[in-house]
Image (cartoon, rainbow, N blue to C red; front, side):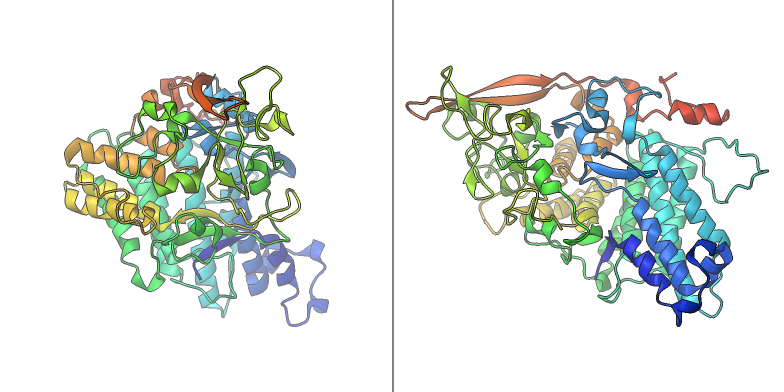
Length: 553
């Protein structure tokens, strides 16, 4: 079984207390000392299990932080993929370019993830499982991986952050400066190398919630690709691209892990046993989420939380590899003939979704009949602001809104991403043939068995780099990558200054003919400071050695 982050970690923590030989003889639960926890195998394992719960997932909207329920801060909402229907986590503030060190909302992970890092440091300073070296090594590998993941998420948002490897005492000087971005990347890579050495390739099916060697190698691939990209590699240092390529290839060559592209692009996001998944969080009917109902169109009824914008819709190629023409919107079905991933990712008017035809249209006549999923239908206040909805990740077999439980996994890392990482790195090393090979493997899977769809990419030079960027945008849509990709490529000043556009659909009551037009639904603004998030002012005030990111003062 591939590494799975399980939502059952809290339950496992409780169960582990009962795994001792005689749980009636243990100390009362409120009297466990640090020595108790880190010298007892069951308690130490339970402590590690609980650390996985600090990793955010982005199914949203609910996230528990410091015993408070807050709206999930999904990165897709603040990218050129979509907008949130209700300004969850103040995402519209980011889109309008109004974020400040005082107004970050729950997109701020600084305190949350440094608290998680502190918990990892407690483990490193305390673990002492005498006589159980194998378990101690595995748990150490898991915590090394998790600490690296927390740091990677911080660095991707803020740039260099303080690297803290110890637990502060009451008398310690807690004023620490930021390490450089390069120092942070070096530390993260060292942690992942350590984790890869200590972690198994696979686990027995009875084990849940464990990072693997493959997870460590894949995360290393990601962080080194980011470090090699123009945002941070301003001199285009070839050594950085070689490091990124080697890291991706190490995962690809990990044959014993059994990773392979899932032939079913849509289905892989519903199948926690897919061989493409490298790292994920599991759910079941007891520990579930509401992604399907929060994101289904309002006619079901749902909330339409994720509203794809027109720019993403028209980024999907036609079956023959050409880009959609504006003239398509003069036809009866402007979304006909798109490549298969479009229909696996986007819901548009006229498509069958959850067993019925979608109706985002409104009557062209005042007082006429309007579509079920329009602003004049049932639950009209929840209609999609762009008149599109998300299909990716959705389990369309669920039939009872807000009653059926959503159990699809949240995928943090999958093989498709690593293939794209490798293609990009190899392009920058001048090996265009290998770059084309791996991007075309992605496209081959995307065809869904249709031989005449999505022709192989044959481009060279800058045209090939544009194809690599484009393929990544489509293949990884809504998977929390686009926000970071446009920043590390240094193209956010173009992509994030484009307004979010919606489609308007008018239907003639007599003929049923539909006409299409476009309107701006949200003006967007991106400034130079937005290449990084601001460090919260509250953190700057607590630590005089912290320097704010550029242009936020």
